[in-house]
Image (tube, rainbow over all chains, first blue to last red):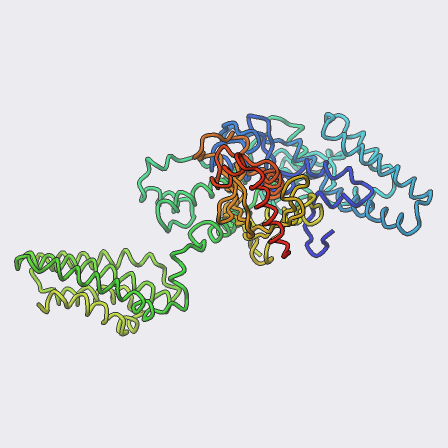
Length: 443
Length: 166
Protein backbone atom coordinates (compact mmCIF):
# COMPACT_ATOMS: atom_id res chain seq x y z
CA UNK A 1 0.00 0.00 0.00
CA UNK A 2 1.21 3.41 -0.87
CA UNK A 3 1.41 5.05 2.51
CA UNK A 4 2.96 8.25 1.18
CA UNK A 5 -0.36 9.25 -0.35
CA UNK A 6 -3.01 9.27 2.26
CA UNK A 7 -5.85 8.68 -0.12
CA UNK A 8 -8.19 5.94 0.97
CA UNK A 9 -8.88 3.47 -1.79
CA UNK A 10 -10.96 0.35 -2.00
CA UNK A 11 -7.79 -1.60 -2.74
CA UNK A 12 -6.69 -0.86 0.83
CA UNK A 13 -8.61 -3.94 1.88
CA UNK A 14 -6.96 -6.33 -0.53
CA UNK A 15 -3.98 -7.38 1.57
CA UNK A 16 -5.88 -7.49 4.84
CA UNK A 17 -7.94 -10.25 6.35
CA UNK A 18 -11.05 -8.43 5.14
CA UNK A 19 -10.39 -8.53 1.42
CA UNK A 20 -14.10 -9.06 0.85
CA UNK A 21 -14.51 -5.43 1.86
CA UNK A 22 -12.89 -4.31 -1.37
CA UNK A 23 -15.99 -4.77 -3.54
CA UNK A 24 -18.15 -3.37 -0.74
CA UNK A 25 -16.14 -0.18 -0.62
CA UNK A 26 -15.96 -0.01 -4.41
CA UNK A 27 -19.77 -0.16 -4.45
CA UNK A 28 -19.91 2.84 -2.11
CA UNK A 29 -17.84 4.94 -4.48
CA UNK A 30 -19.10 7.03 -7.34
CA UNK A 31 -18.04 5.64 -10.69
CA UNK A 32 -17.33 9.06 -12.08
CA UNK A 33 -15.05 10.57 -9.43
CA UNK A 34 -14.03 7.25 -7.82
CA UNK A 35 -14.53 8.85 -4.40
CA UNK A 36 -17.12 7.98 -1.78
CA UNK A 37 -20.54 9.19 -2.84
CA UNK A 38 -21.00 12.82 -1.95
CA UNK A 39 -24.70 13.69 -1.92
CA UNK A 40 -25.70 10.66 -3.99
CA UNK A 41 -28.47 11.24 -6.52
CA UNK A 42 -30.38 8.62 -8.43
CA UNK A 43 -31.20 9.03 -12.11
CA UNK A 44 -34.42 8.02 -13.83
CA UNK A 45 -32.52 4.96 -15.06
CA UNK A 46 -31.79 4.09 -11.41
CA UNK A 47 -28.06 4.72 -11.40
CA UNK A 48 -26.46 6.57 -8.54
CA UNK A 49 -23.73 9.23 -8.71
CA UNK A 50 -22.51 12.17 -6.67
CA UNK A 51 -24.72 15.15 -7.26
CA UNK A 52 -21.92 17.25 -8.73
CA UNK A 53 -20.59 14.40 -10.90
CA UNK A 54 -23.90 13.55 -12.52
CA UNK A 55 -24.78 17.21 -12.96
CA UNK A 56 -21.50 17.79 -14.77
CA UNK A 57 -22.07 14.72 -16.95
CA UNK A 58 -25.62 15.68 -17.82
CA UNK A 59 -24.58 19.25 -18.56
CA UNK A 60 -21.95 17.91 -20.92
CA UNK A 61 -23.94 15.34 -22.91
CA UNK A 62 -27.31 14.78 -21.25
CA UNK A 63 -26.78 11.06 -20.82
CA UNK A 64 -26.32 8.67 -17.95
CA UNK A 65 -22.63 7.67 -17.90
CA UNK A 66 -23.46 4.05 -17.12
CA UNK A 67 -26.31 3.14 -19.47
CA UNK A 68 -26.24 6.11 -21.86
CA UNK A 69 -29.95 6.75 -21.60
CA UNK A 70 -31.00 10.37 -21.78
CA UNK A 71 -31.75 12.17 -18.55
CA UNK A 72 -32.20 15.65 -17.17
CA UNK A 73 -30.68 17.22 -14.12
CA UNK A 74 -34.04 18.30 -12.73
CA UNK A 75 -35.21 14.69 -12.69
CA UNK A 76 -32.48 13.64 -10.28
CA UNK A 77 -33.62 12.56 -6.85
CA UNK A 78 -31.66 12.17 -3.66
CA UNK A 79 -30.58 8.71 -2.68
CA UNK A 80 -30.63 9.21 1.06
CA UNK A 81 -30.14 5.56 1.96
CA UNK A 82 -26.83 5.45 0.10
CA UNK A 83 -25.73 8.65 1.80
CA UNK A 84 -26.39 7.10 5.15
CA UNK A 85 -24.53 3.92 4.27
CA UNK A 86 -21.54 5.88 2.99
CA UNK A 87 -21.44 8.08 6.08
CA UNK A 88 -21.58 5.11 8.42
CA UNK A 89 -19.05 3.16 6.40
CA UNK A 90 -16.61 6.04 6.31
CA UNK A 91 -16.97 6.43 10.04
CA UNK A 92 -16.33 2.76 10.66
CA UNK A 93 -13.60 2.41 8.04
CA UNK A 94 -10.44 3.52 9.87
CA UNK A 95 -11.01 1.28 12.88
CA UNK A 96 -12.01 -1.69 10.76
CA UNK A 97 -9.08 -1.28 8.40
CA UNK A 98 -6.66 -0.93 11.30
CA UNK A 99 -7.92 -4.16 12.82
CA UNK A 100 -7.83 -5.99 9.54
CA UNK A 101 -4.24 -4.88 8.93
CA UNK A 102 -3.08 -5.70 12.44
CA UNK A 103 -4.68 -9.06 12.00
CA UNK A 104 -2.52 -9.83 9.00
CA UNK A 105 0.59 -8.49 10.68
CA UNK A 106 -0.01 -10.58 13.78
CA UNK A 107 -0.65 -13.66 11.75
CA UNK A 108 2.57 -13.16 9.87
CA UNK A 109 4.46 -12.88 13.13
CA UNK A 110 2.99 -15.78 15.06
CA UNK A 111 1.40 -17.99 12.50
CA UNK A 112 -2.28 -18.19 13.37
CA UNK A 113 -2.84 -18.48 17.10
CA UNK A 114 -6.25 -19.30 18.51
CA UNK A 115 -6.93 -15.77 19.60
CA UNK A 116 -6.55 -14.62 16.06
CA UNK A 117 -8.97 -17.17 14.78
CA UNK A 118 -11.51 -15.88 17.21
CA UNK A 119 -10.96 -12.33 16.10
CA UNK A 120 -11.25 -13.39 12.51
CA UNK A 121 -14.65 -14.76 13.36
CA UNK A 122 -15.65 -11.48 14.89
CA UNK A 123 -14.53 -9.71 11.77
CA UNK A 124 -16.67 -11.93 9.68
CA UNK A 125 -19.63 -11.02 11.84
CA UNK A 126 -18.88 -7.40 11.34
CA UNK A 127 -18.53 -7.90 7.65
CA UNK A 128 -21.91 -9.55 7.45
CA UNK A 129 -23.51 -6.90 9.51
CA UNK A 130 -22.07 -4.22 7.28
CA UNK A 131 -23.04 -5.95 4.11
CA UNK A 132 -26.57 -6.56 5.19
CA UNK A 133 -27.18 -2.93 5.72
CA UNK A 134 -27.68 -1.86 2.15
CA UNK A 135 -30.06 -4.70 1.51
CA UNK A 136 -32.16 -4.59 4.62
CA UNK A 137 -34.77 -2.11 5.45
CA UNK A 138 -34.22 0.56 8.02
CA UNK A 139 -36.11 -1.48 10.55
CA UNK A 140 -33.07 -3.67 11.13
CA UNK A 141 -30.75 -0.82 11.77
CA UNK A 142 -31.18 -1.03 15.49
CA UNK A 143 -30.43 -4.74 15.40
CA UNK A 144 -27.26 -4.07 13.55
CA UNK A 145 -26.33 -1.45 16.00
CA UNK A 146 -26.70 -3.91 18.83
CA UNK A 147 -24.54 -6.39 16.95
CA UNK A 148 -22.01 -3.79 16.07
CA UNK A 149 -21.60 -2.46 19.53
CA UNK A 150 -21.57 -5.77 21.36
CA UNK A 151 -17.87 -6.62 20.89
CA UNK A 152 -16.00 -4.20 23.12
CA UNK A 153 -13.44 -3.27 20.48
CA UNK A 154 -16.10 -1.64 18.38
CA UNK A 155 -16.80 0.94 21.02
CA UNK A 156 -14.24 3.03 19.26
CA UNK A 157 -16.63 3.37 16.41
CA UNK A 158 -19.52 4.30 18.62
CA UNK A 159 -17.44 6.98 20.22
CA UNK A 160 -16.49 8.43 16.89
CA UNK A 161 -18.25 11.69 16.43
CA UNK A 162 -19.49 10.67 13.02
CA UNK A 163 -21.24 7.71 14.45
CA UNK A 164 -23.50 9.67 16.73
CA UNK A 165 -26.86 8.07 16.49
CA UNK A 166 -30.32 9.30 17.13
CA UNK A 167 -30.67 7.45 20.46
CA UNK A 168 -33.43 9.18 22.31
CA UNK A 169 -32.69 12.46 20.60
CA UNK A 170 -35.18 14.37 18.54
CA UNK A 171 -34.50 17.05 16.04
CA UNK A 172 -35.97 20.49 16.35
CA UNK A 173 -38.03 20.89 13.20
CA UNK A 174 -37.10 24.55 12.98
CA UNK A 175 -33.35 24.67 13.51
CA UNK A 176 -32.39 21.00 13.09
CA UNK A 177 -30.53 20.90 16.40
CA UNK A 178 -30.88 17.58 18.18
CA UNK A 179 -31.84 17.44 21.81
CA UNK A 180 -33.53 15.33 24.40
CA UNK A 181 -37.20 14.86 23.96
CA UNK A 182 -37.96 16.53 27.29
CA UNK A 183 -36.27 19.75 26.32
CA UNK A 184 -37.70 20.10 22.85
CA UNK A 185 -40.90 21.85 23.92
CA UNK A 186 -39.19 24.53 25.90
CA UNK A 187 -36.68 24.91 23.09
CA UNK A 188 -39.39 25.26 20.47
CA UNK A 189 -40.84 28.22 22.30
CA UNK A 190 -37.70 30.27 21.86
CA UNK A 191 -36.20 28.71 18.73
CA UNK A 192 -35.62 31.26 16.00
CA UNK A 193 -34.40 28.80 13.42
CA UNK A 194 -31.18 30.74 12.98
CA UNK A 195 -28.67 28.02 13.55
CA UNK A 196 -29.84 25.75 10.77
CA UNK A 197 -27.46 26.45 7.92
CA UNK A 198 -24.38 26.62 10.10
CA UNK A 199 -25.20 23.46 11.95
CA UNK A 200 -25.48 21.61 8.70
CA UNK A 201 -22.23 22.93 7.40
CA UNK A 202 -19.86 23.05 10.30
CA UNK A 203 -20.21 19.74 11.95
CA UNK A 204 -20.69 16.39 10.46
CA UNK A 205 -21.88 14.89 13.69
CA UNK A 206 -24.95 17.05 13.61
CA UNK A 207 -25.64 16.76 9.97
CA UNK A 208 -25.25 13.01 9.84
CA UNK A 209 -28.36 12.50 11.92
CA UNK A 210 -30.10 14.98 9.70
CA UNK A 211 -29.51 12.56 6.86
CA UNK A 212 -30.98 9.87 9.03
CA UNK A 213 -33.88 12.13 9.57
CA UNK A 214 -34.27 12.59 5.91
CA UNK A 215 -35.16 8.94 5.72
CA UNK A 216 -37.53 9.00 8.63
CA UNK A 217 -39.44 12.00 7.53
CA UNK A 218 -40.16 11.81 3.88
CA UNK A 219 -40.94 13.90 1.99
CA UNK A 220 -37.96 15.93 3.04
CA UNK A 221 -38.32 19.65 3.03
CA UNK A 222 -35.70 21.72 1.22
CA UNK A 223 -33.74 23.94 3.53
CA UNK A 224 -35.48 27.18 2.89
CA UNK A 225 -33.18 30.16 2.70
CA UNK A 226 -31.07 30.99 -0.36
CA UNK A 227 -30.99 27.42 -1.55
CA UNK A 228 -33.23 27.73 -4.55
CA UNK A 229 -31.84 25.80 -7.49
CA UNK A 230 -30.67 27.68 -10.52
CA UNK A 231 -32.71 27.12 -13.65
CA UNK A 232 -31.01 26.13 -16.86
CA UNK A 233 -30.75 28.85 -19.45
CA UNK A 234 -31.23 28.68 -23.16
CA UNK A 235 -27.93 30.26 -24.04
CA UNK A 236 -28.63 30.55 -27.73
CA UNK A 237 -31.52 32.89 -26.97
CA UNK A 238 -29.44 35.10 -24.70
CA UNK A 239 -27.42 38.00 -25.99
CA UNK A 240 -23.89 38.18 -24.66
CA UNK A 241 -24.61 41.27 -22.60
CA UNK A 242 -27.73 39.79 -21.06
CA UNK A 243 -25.73 36.74 -20.10
CA UNK A 244 -22.98 38.91 -18.70
CA UNK A 245 -25.58 40.69 -16.59
CA UNK A 246 -26.91 37.35 -15.35
CA UNK A 247 -23.45 36.34 -14.23
CA UNK A 248 -22.99 39.66 -12.50
CA UNK A 249 -26.30 39.22 -10.72
CA UNK A 250 -25.20 35.79 -9.56
CA UNK A 251 -22.03 37.33 -8.17
CA UNK A 252 -19.63 35.34 -10.31
CA UNK A 253 -16.96 36.67 -12.67
CA UNK A 254 -18.48 38.08 -15.85
CA UNK A 255 -15.34 38.39 -17.95
CA UNK A 256 -14.45 36.62 -21.13
CA UNK A 257 -16.06 35.54 -24.37
CA UNK A 258 -19.65 34.35 -24.57
CA UNK A 259 -18.36 30.80 -24.88
CA UNK A 260 -16.51 31.17 -21.62
CA UNK A 261 -19.49 32.88 -19.96
CA UNK A 262 -21.67 29.93 -20.90
CA UNK A 263 -19.15 27.39 -19.64
CA UNK A 264 -18.79 29.32 -16.40
CA UNK A 265 -22.53 29.63 -15.91
CA UNK A 266 -23.00 25.91 -16.48
CA UNK A 267 -20.29 25.03 -13.98
CA UNK A 268 -21.71 27.46 -11.43
CA UNK A 269 -25.14 25.87 -11.93
CA UNK A 270 -23.61 22.45 -11.31
CA UNK A 271 -21.82 23.61 -8.18
CA UNK A 272 -24.77 25.56 -6.87
CA UNK A 273 -27.44 22.96 -7.53
CA UNK A 274 -25.40 20.09 -6.13
CA UNK A 275 -24.87 22.23 -3.05
CA UNK A 276 -28.64 22.60 -2.82
CA UNK A 277 -28.91 18.80 -2.84
CA UNK A 278 -26.35 18.43 -0.10
CA UNK A 279 -27.34 17.66 3.46
CA UNK A 280 -24.28 19.67 4.48
CA UNK A 281 -24.56 22.75 2.31
CA UNK A 282 -21.53 24.95 2.07
CA UNK A 283 -21.28 28.72 1.90
CA UNK A 284 -21.29 30.68 -1.31
CA UNK A 285 -17.72 31.69 -0.56
CA UNK A 286 -16.63 28.06 -0.64
CA UNK A 287 -18.52 27.51 -3.87
CA UNK A 288 -16.80 30.52 -5.38
CA UNK A 289 -13.49 28.98 -4.40
CA UNK A 290 -14.48 25.82 -6.26
CA UNK A 291 -15.44 27.90 -9.25
CA UNK A 292 -12.05 29.55 -9.09
CA UNK A 293 -10.36 26.14 -9.10
CA UNK A 294 -12.43 25.24 -12.12
CA UNK A 295 -11.56 28.56 -13.73
CA UNK A 296 -7.88 27.91 -13.38
CA UNK A 297 -8.02 24.35 -14.65
CA UNK A 298 -10.67 24.53 -17.36
CA UNK A 299 -12.05 28.04 -17.62
CA UNK A 300 -10.54 31.35 -18.64
CA UNK A 301 -7.43 30.84 -16.56
CA UNK A 302 -6.60 27.56 -18.20
CA UNK A 303 -3.39 27.54 -20.15
CA UNK A 304 -4.10 27.82 -23.85
CA UNK A 305 -1.89 28.20 -26.89
CA UNK A 306 -2.57 31.95 -27.13
CA UNK A 307 -1.30 32.50 -23.61
CA UNK A 308 2.08 31.17 -24.58
CA UNK A 309 2.74 34.44 -26.39
CA UNK A 310 1.82 36.47 -23.35
CA UNK A 311 4.44 34.96 -21.15
CA UNK A 312 6.04 37.13 -18.55
CA UNK A 313 9.31 37.17 -20.41
CA UNK A 314 7.65 38.01 -23.70
CA UNK A 315 10.22 39.56 -25.96
CA UNK A 316 8.51 42.32 -27.94
CA UNK A 317 11.51 43.18 -30.05
CA UNK A 318 12.23 39.55 -30.74
CA UNK A 319 8.63 39.08 -31.81
CA UNK A 320 8.89 42.07 -34.10
CA UNK A 321 12.10 40.76 -35.68
CA UNK A 322 10.92 37.21 -36.07
CA UNK A 323 7.67 38.30 -37.71
CA UNK A 324 9.24 41.10 -39.70
CA UNK A 325 8.52 39.39 -43.00
CA UNK A 326 4.81 39.26 -42.21
CA UNK A 327 4.68 42.85 -41.10
CA UNK A 328 6.58 43.91 -44.20
CA UNK A 329 4.17 42.02 -46.34
CA UNK A 330 1.22 43.73 -44.70
CA UNK A 331 2.83 47.11 -45.24
CA UNK A 332 3.54 46.27 -48.88
CA UNK A 333 -0.06 45.19 -49.36
CA UNK A 334 -1.28 48.41 -47.85
CA UNK A 335 0.95 50.41 -50.17
CA UNK A 336 -0.23 48.53 -53.22
CA UNK A 337 -3.87 49.04 -52.30
CA UNK A 338 -3.72 52.76 -51.93
CA UNK A 339 -1.87 53.72 -55.15
CA UNK A 340 -4.79 53.80 -57.61
CA UNK A 341 -7.32 55.54 -55.38
CA UNK A 342 -8.33 59.14 -55.57
CA UNK A 343 -7.29 61.62 -53.03
CA UNK A 344 -10.48 61.75 -50.99
CA UNK A 345 -10.78 58.01 -50.96
CA UNK A 346 -7.20 57.74 -50.09
CA UNK A 347 -7.78 59.70 -47.00
CA UNK A 348 -10.58 57.40 -45.94
CA UNK A 349 -8.51 54.41 -46.80
CA UNK A 350 -5.74 55.72 -44.71
CA UNK A 351 -8.04 56.27 -41.80
CA UNK A 352 -9.37 52.76 -42.20
CA UNK A 353 -5.93 51.36 -42.17
CA UNK A 354 -5.13 53.57 -39.30
CA UNK A 355 -7.87 51.91 -37.37
CA UNK A 356 -6.78 48.40 -38.12
CA UNK A 357 -3.20 49.25 -37.46
CA UNK A 358 -4.20 50.90 -34.25
CA UNK A 359 -5.96 47.70 -33.31
CA UNK A 360 -2.91 45.67 -34.17
CA UNK A 361 -0.73 48.00 -32.27
CA UNK A 362 -3.04 47.84 -29.38
CA UNK A 363 -2.85 44.09 -29.43
CA UNK A 364 0.85 44.26 -29.51
CA UNK A 365 0.84 46.62 -26.57
CA UNK A 366 -1.31 44.32 -24.65
CA UNK A 367 1.45 41.85 -24.96
CA UNK A 368 4.00 44.33 -23.79
CA UNK A 369 1.65 45.49 -21.09
CA UNK A 370 1.27 41.98 -19.87
CA UNK A 371 4.96 41.73 -19.95
CA UNK A 372 5.41 44.94 -18.00
CA UNK A 373 2.37 44.97 -15.82
CA UNK A 374 0.55 41.74 -15.22
CA UNK A 375 -2.06 43.39 -13.07
CA UNK A 376 -3.70 45.03 -16.03
CA UNK A 377 -6.68 42.94 -17.13
CA UNK A 378 -7.12 42.54 -20.86
CA UNK A 379 -10.65 43.87 -20.68
CA UNK A 380 -9.16 47.34 -21.08
CA UNK A 381 -8.67 46.61 -24.77
CA UNK A 382 -12.22 47.13 -25.76
CA UNK A 383 -12.40 50.49 -24.09
CA UNK A 384 -9.21 51.64 -25.65
CA UNK A 385 -10.24 50.43 -29.05
CA UNK A 386 -13.62 52.05 -28.87
CA UNK A 387 -12.03 55.34 -27.92
CA UNK A 388 -9.66 55.07 -30.84
CA UNK A 389 -12.47 54.23 -33.24
CA UNK A 390 -14.57 57.07 -31.96
CA UNK A 391 -11.77 59.53 -32.45
CA UNK A 392 -10.95 58.11 -35.83
CA UNK A 393 -14.53 58.41 -37.01
CA UNK A 394 -14.75 61.90 -35.71
CA UNK A 395 -11.50 62.77 -37.35
CA UNK A 396 -12.72 61.31 -40.57
CA UNK A 397 -15.76 63.56 -40.46
CA UNK A 398 -13.77 66.59 -39.54
CA UNK A 399 -11.38 65.89 -42.37
CA UNK A 400 -8.36 65.93 -40.16
CA UNK A 401 -5.08 64.66 -41.44
CA UNK A 402 -4.04 61.17 -40.68
CA UNK A 403 -1.15 62.30 -38.62
CA UNK A 404 -3.34 64.00 -36.08
CA UNK A 405 -5.44 60.88 -35.87
CA UNK A 406 -2.40 58.94 -34.93
CA UNK A 407 -1.82 61.45 -32.23
CA UNK A 408 -5.37 61.13 -31.08
CA UNK A 409 -5.13 57.39 -31.14
CA UNK A 410 -2.02 57.32 -29.09
CA UNK A 411 -3.53 59.86 -26.77
CA UNK A 412 -6.49 57.56 -26.33
CA UNK A 413 -4.12 54.76 -25.57
CA UNK A 414 -2.24 56.86 -23.15
CA UNK A 415 -5.49 57.86 -21.56
CA UNK A 416 -6.33 54.29 -20.79
CA UNK A 417 -2.83 53.36 -19.88
CA UNK A 418 -1.65 56.33 -17.93
CA UNK A 419 0.20 54.03 -15.61
CA UNK A 420 2.15 52.59 -18.48
CA UNK A 421 3.06 55.77 -20.23
CA UNK A 422 6.67 54.85 -20.33
CA UNK A 423 5.77 51.66 -22.14
CA UNK A 424 4.23 53.66 -24.90
CA UNK A 425 7.28 55.71 -25.40
CA UNK A 426 9.25 52.55 -25.97
CA UNK A 427 10.97 51.94 -29.24
CA UNK A 428 8.82 49.13 -30.69
CA UNK A 429 5.81 51.38 -30.96
CA UNK A 430 7.62 53.88 -33.09
CA UNK A 431 8.81 51.11 -35.28
CA UNK A 432 5.36 49.78 -35.85
CA UNK A 433 3.30 52.87 -36.08
CA UNK A 434 6.10 54.60 -37.87
CA UNK A 435 6.50 52.01 -40.56
CA UNK A 436 2.94 51.20 -41.21
CA UNK A 437 1.34 54.56 -40.73
CA UNK A 438 3.85 56.78 -42.36
CA UNK A 439 3.67 54.91 -45.58
CA UNK A 440 0.46 56.46 -46.95
CA UNK A 441 1.60 59.94 -46.10
CA UNK A 442 5.06 59.83 -47.49
CA UNK A 443 3.74 59.37 -50.95
CA UNK B 1 -3.78 22.84 -2.45
CA UNK B 2 -6.34 23.55 -5.04
CA UNK B 3 -6.50 20.82 -7.60
CA UNK B 4 -9.14 20.22 -10.17
CA UNK B 5 -11.56 17.35 -10.01
CA UNK B 6 -9.77 15.88 -13.02
CA UNK B 7 -6.41 15.63 -11.28
CA UNK B 8 -8.08 14.29 -8.15
CA UNK B 9 -9.70 11.52 -10.09
CA UNK B 10 -6.47 10.77 -11.95
CA UNK B 11 -4.65 10.54 -8.66
CA UNK B 12 -7.25 8.04 -7.44
CA UNK B 13 -6.86 5.96 -10.55
CA UNK B 14 -3.09 6.05 -10.13
CA UNK B 15 -3.50 4.98 -6.55
CA UNK B 16 -5.73 2.06 -7.55
CA UNK B 17 -3.44 0.96 -10.38
CA UNK B 18 -0.40 1.13 -8.11
CA UNK B 19 -1.85 -1.05 -5.39
CA UNK B 20 -3.78 -3.47 -7.58
CA UNK B 21 -2.35 -3.51 -11.11
CA UNK B 22 -4.03 -5.69 -13.71
CA UNK B 23 -1.80 -8.36 -15.21
CA UNK B 24 0.58 -7.20 -17.89
CA UNK B 25 -0.15 -3.50 -17.36
CA UNK B 26 1.69 -0.74 -15.56
CA UNK B 27 0.75 2.92 -15.75
CA UNK B 28 1.29 6.16 -13.93
CA UNK B 29 1.94 9.86 -14.43
CA UNK B 30 5.35 10.72 -15.87
CA UNK B 31 5.90 13.16 -13.02
CA UNK B 32 3.64 13.71 -10.08
CA UNK B 33 3.54 17.45 -10.78
CA UNK B 34 1.49 16.85 -13.88
CA UNK B 35 -1.28 14.31 -13.55
CA UNK B 36 -2.38 14.90 -17.14
CA UNK B 37 0.45 13.05 -18.86
CA UNK B 38 0.89 9.37 -18.14
CA UNK B 39 3.16 6.69 -19.37
CA UNK B 40 1.98 3.11 -19.65
CA UNK B 41 3.64 -0.21 -20.33
CA UNK B 42 1.63 -2.97 -21.93
CA UNK B 43 2.73 -6.56 -22.24
CA UNK B 44 2.09 -8.30 -25.53
CA UNK B 45 -0.73 -10.80 -25.03
CA UNK B 46 0.32 -14.45 -25.01
CA UNK B 47 -0.44 -16.53 -28.03
CA UNK B 48 -0.14 -13.56 -30.39
CA UNK B 49 2.82 -12.31 -32.40
CA UNK B 50 3.06 -9.52 -29.81
CA UNK B 51 3.93 -12.08 -27.11
CA UNK B 52 7.06 -11.25 -25.18
CA UNK B 53 7.02 -7.59 -26.12
CA UNK B 54 6.72 -4.64 -23.77
CA UNK B 55 5.10 -1.68 -25.44
CA UNK B 56 5.47 1.80 -23.97
CA UNK B 57 2.72 4.32 -24.63
CA UNK B 58 1.78 7.78 -23.47
CA UNK B 59 -1.66 8.90 -22.38
CA UNK B 60 -2.69 12.54 -22.54
CA UNK B 61 -5.69 13.59 -20.49
CA UNK B 62 -7.92 16.55 -21.26
CA UNK B 63 -8.60 19.15 -18.57
CA UNK B 64 -12.22 18.05 -18.34
CA UNK B 65 -11.36 14.39 -17.79
CA UNK B 66 -13.33 12.15 -17.20
CA UNK B 67 -16.00 13.90 -19.26
CA UNK B 68 -13.75 13.59 -22.29
CA UNK B 69 -11.45 10.65 -23.02
CA UNK B 70 -7.66 10.75 -23.03
CA UNK B 71 -5.62 10.13 -26.15
CA UNK B 72 -3.12 7.31 -26.35
CA UNK B 73 0.00 6.96 -28.45
CA UNK B 74 2.48 4.14 -28.62
CA UNK B 75 6.05 5.31 -28.22
CA UNK B 76 7.45 2.34 -30.13
CA UNK B 77 7.03 0.99 -33.63
CA UNK B 78 3.63 -0.59 -33.82
CA UNK B 79 2.42 -2.42 -36.90
CA UNK B 80 -1.27 -2.90 -36.23
CA UNK B 81 -4.49 -2.17 -38.15
CA UNK B 82 -5.86 0.03 -35.34
CA UNK B 83 -2.74 2.04 -34.64
CA UNK B 84 -1.88 5.01 -36.84
CA UNK B 85 1.64 5.07 -38.26
CA UNK B 86 2.49 7.81 -35.73
CA UNK B 87 1.51 5.50 -32.88
CA UNK B 88 -1.90 6.99 -32.02
CA UNK B 89 -4.33 4.32 -30.92
CA UNK B 90 -7.75 4.27 -32.55
CA UNK B 91 -10.27 2.24 -30.60
CA UNK B 92 -13.86 2.88 -29.69
CA UNK B 93 -13.30 3.32 -25.96
CA UNK B 94 -11.12 6.37 -26.71
CA UNK B 95 -13.84 8.04 -28.77
CA UNK B 96 -16.42 10.30 -27.14
CA UNK B 97 -19.96 9.01 -27.66
CA UNK B 98 -21.03 12.23 -29.31
CA UNK B 99 -19.12 12.00 -32.54
CA UNK B 100 -18.93 8.78 -34.47
CA UNK B 101 -17.11 9.54 -37.68
CA UNK B 102 -17.13 5.93 -38.78
CA UNK B 103 -20.73 5.10 -37.90
CA UNK B 104 -19.87 1.61 -36.87
CA UNK B 105 -19.26 1.84 -33.14
CA UNK B 106 -21.91 1.13 -30.57
CA UNK B 107 -22.44 4.00 -28.16
CA UNK B 108 -21.96 1.53 -25.35
CA UNK B 109 -18.42 0.75 -26.51
CA UNK B 110 -17.32 4.32 -26.51
CA UNK B 111 -15.95 6.61 -23.86
CA UNK B 112 -18.02 7.41 -20.82
CA UNK B 113 -16.95 9.03 -17.54
CA UNK B 114 -17.20 5.67 -15.83
CA UNK B 115 -14.44 4.23 -17.99
CA UNK B 116 -10.91 4.39 -16.67
CA UNK B 117 -7.27 4.12 -17.58
CA UNK B 118 -7.35 0.52 -16.49
CA UNK B 119 -10.23 -0.28 -18.84
CA UNK B 120 -8.54 1.54 -21.71
CA UNK B 121 -5.33 -0.40 -21.28
CA UNK B 122 -7.17 -3.70 -21.01
CA UNK B 123 -9.08 -2.84 -24.18
CA UNK B 124 -5.84 -1.97 -25.95
CA UNK B 125 -4.36 -5.27 -24.87
CA UNK B 126 -7.26 -7.17 -26.33
CA UNK B 127 -7.07 -4.98 -29.42
CA UNK B 128 -3.49 -6.22 -29.92
CA UNK B 129 -4.76 -9.78 -29.84
CA UNK B 130 -7.80 -9.15 -32.03
CA UNK B 131 -7.49 -6.29 -34.48
CA UNK B 132 -10.67 -4.68 -35.73
CA UNK B 133 -10.24 -4.18 -39.44
CA UNK B 134 -13.62 -2.57 -40.03
CA UNK B 135 -12.19 0.91 -39.83
CA UNK B 136 -8.45 0.56 -39.90
CA UNK B 137 -6.22 3.40 -38.79
CA UNK B 138 -3.33 1.84 -40.70
CA UNK B 139 -4.79 0.62 -43.99
CA UNK B 140 -1.61 -1.11 -45.13
CA UNK B 141 -1.32 -3.05 -41.91
CA UNK B 142 -5.00 -3.97 -42.11
CA UNK B 143 -4.65 -5.28 -45.65
CA UNK B 144 -1.56 -7.22 -44.75
CA UNK B 145 -3.32 -8.62 -41.70
CA UNK B 146 -6.21 -9.77 -43.90
CA UNK B 147 -4.31 -11.02 -46.90
CA UNK B 148 -0.77 -11.85 -45.89
CA UNK B 149 -1.02 -12.82 -42.23
CA UNK B 150 2.43 -14.46 -42.21
CA UNK B 151 4.15 -11.30 -43.33
CA UNK B 152 2.16 -9.22 -40.82
CA UNK B 153 3.24 -11.46 -37.99
CA UNK B 154 6.84 -11.31 -39.13
CA UNK B 155 6.85 -7.50 -39.01
CA UNK B 156 5.20 -7.54 -35.60
CA UNK B 157 7.79 -9.97 -34.24
CA UNK B 158 10.59 -7.88 -35.66
CA UNK B 159 9.18 -4.81 -33.91
CA UNK B 160 8.96 -6.76 -30.68
CA UNK B 161 12.63 -7.68 -30.97
CA UNK B 162 13.57 -4.14 -31.87
CA UNK B 163 11.66 -2.85 -28.87
CA UNK B 164 13.54 -5.20 -26.57
CA UNK B 165 16.86 -4.04 -28.03
CA UNK B 166 17.70 -7.42 -29.59
